Image 1 (cartoon, rainbow over the protein chains, first blue to last red):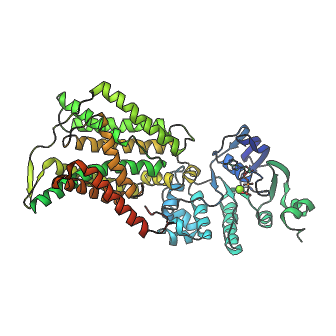
Image 2 (image 1 turned 90 degrees about the horizontal axis):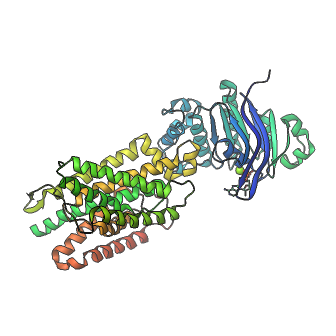
Length: 224
Length: 286
Ligand SMILES: Nc1ncnc2c1ncn2[C@@H]1O[C@H](COP(=O)(O)OP(=O)(O)OP(=O)(O)O)[C@@H](O)[C@H]1O
Ligand SMILES: [Mg+2]
């Protein structure tokens, strides 16, 4: 029996005024599953992320989320004037969790940064705060919009390890939006490819990595 | 010397009233990004309500409290008009608050007429180091001190206060974590109304208030709020006190008819000096 989907998107259309950013997109993420979403700049990935988080209204189609969804938005989007501890506490707005100690257990570095203003942190530290803030809502599914954006490879690898560990230990489902397809295929069993607002390919990561079109566009040649 | 001290103390009281108006502007601007030109109106509504309720024989305390609550409701209604519709830009909202201010004139004239009204405050005066200061002025200073301390605690220490700050700091991120930014904006307007109302009930015994008193109140309050870059309560308070003292000194030493010009001129000089000192691009801390 396949596990029930935590995220189910059916024929989703999202438009900015007259411009259609998503055109009849259908996808799903199962309980405890890690799924990647790839696509070039302007494909509509962030639009999909915002629609999943309920921040954009669909023109048509449906978005169904079972359980709680948290979003790590593109570009971190912290509260720069507030401390790290306050950023985390506000992440618990939906769940009612105010005490970040459970997040400090997962991301101990955040405990050291607790009193710093979020706006002055490095990119990697900010991404970690965004990560911790999303965890504060006790999510069943986490949408990560560009984990690796602007980060050094070892920082990205560290965050990816945390993500995989949360998935393994707590069954956290993940929709990972990534420019780094190699990373995405490594972490996720399945992937979707979005281009100009439409899903063009989907399938097992291994199969997609072997697909010459995908490999050519996202991996800079076939991977070995 | 004692005349100087008297002017200084009275000036501080006037400055405190300005600070309360300005704090409302700051609270609303911090949370919604809107400059609320109806801020003076909240004070006028509260002042007129207090004078009517006291006239009807309601006791002190209850009258002022009811008047401040009325101003908070006026704030909430203004908020509904200005930021109630999602997607309204701060500039459109500003125009709406101007409109609310003008509309309020009509309502106030219908309800209270166009003659200035006063209300009894605390009677008597006390002598501090040879300077006489009215008890009402001391009350204004005390209430303002308490209000600013409460605001600092609210925004700096409470969860709700931080959520309000978050809406100003990054509205998109506030929505991401699930904060209802629109509702927070309405809350800020209600709080702004409350602060304006507080100023209104405190000022009315000092100088009679009429429907168009909001202009003087908002000009002073706005100068102080801009002094604090519309976001920083403590600097706003300092600016307001400076304004109040400058105006009172000007009046006291015989330039009464030009007190507003003198105060605003002074303000301009301070701001120009400040702008020269500050780096052109800077992240304003809270
Ligand atoms: N707020 C907006 N208003 C109007 N158009 C928008 C808005 N946001 C995005 N778009 C447009 O919608 C399309 C999809 O944008 P989106 O940000 O979802 O792409 P993306 O796949 O996340 O790109 P990137 O990889 O650069 O982050 C683009 O053509 C973009 O210009
Ligand atoms: Mg994007």
